[in-house]
Image (tube, rainbow, N blue to C red; front, side):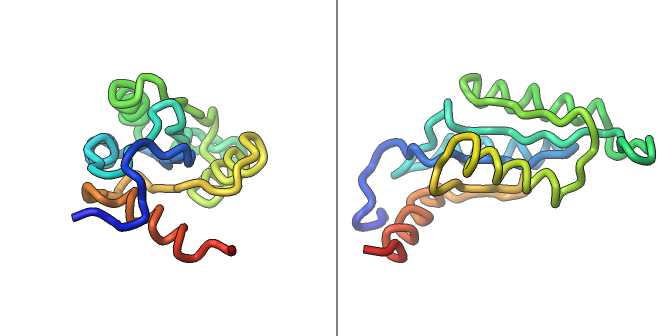
Amino acid sequence: MEFDGVAPGVTRVPIVIFSFDRPEYLDRLCRGLLAQAQLRPDPARVFLLQDGALSPRTRRRYGRPLRMRECVELFRRHFPEGQVLASEHNLGIADNILRGQRHVFETLDEELGYFFEDDLEPGPLYLAALEAMRAATEAY
């Protein structure tokens, strides 16, 4: 099966992955992205937004720093051309997502980005489905 109107190849849409301390989930997501059948990610345009462990306000430690480092290493193995944007401090999911949106829409000055949390398990046509939905809803 393929999606009509979606040319096979590589998408230029930036892909942002939000990560904390679950390398087993992140591994499945990265493997799924690399196994896309119709539309593959551009490895240089995949970004890992790794949240940090230490709250700058309370000095409380969240998550497991060793597993956070494991997430970064795992991402780099899957996407050596990708970029890691690791936070020094714990931002929390909402601020980490905002940081990813700002990166895509302000820093990269893109009109579109695909944003995934680390527990997504994409099927082999996931990116093609997103592209088909974009094309079907885009203003003419």
